[in-house]
Image (tube, rainbow, N blue to C red):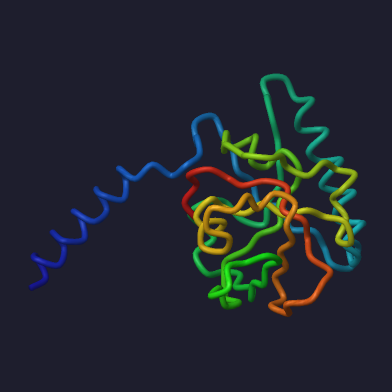
Length: 175
């Protein structure tokens, strides 16, 4: 039984290695940065820090793009679970728990992830005005064949405004 289980596990691992993740990891370096809460208690303070960090990293010779995110693709796996509500969703769509993350401008570009629409810019990277990107799979589940760009989405589950406007849809990435 143990040998059989080990064989099945190895076969599963090999199949997972053949899955196209939807981003290009070559030449990408990931670093964990934890800000001390005592100094960065407000969203704007943390956003300002990360904006400056990304700017400085992009000035390093050989760096093409930089971005910051609360997680990486394939690592999201249920760490954050948000109850989703969406403006203009299909009639049979019920708010549901989805994985979500917070990313900076440049995050998807740094991973060579295709985006229909656009990423937010640093001027929009405020809690009150931020936009959202959704995966193509989630967009199909919520809006079927309707174009989600400009529609609203929120992650607290309450089906009332304010919503974050959908700025873009990521193509083919596995979360």
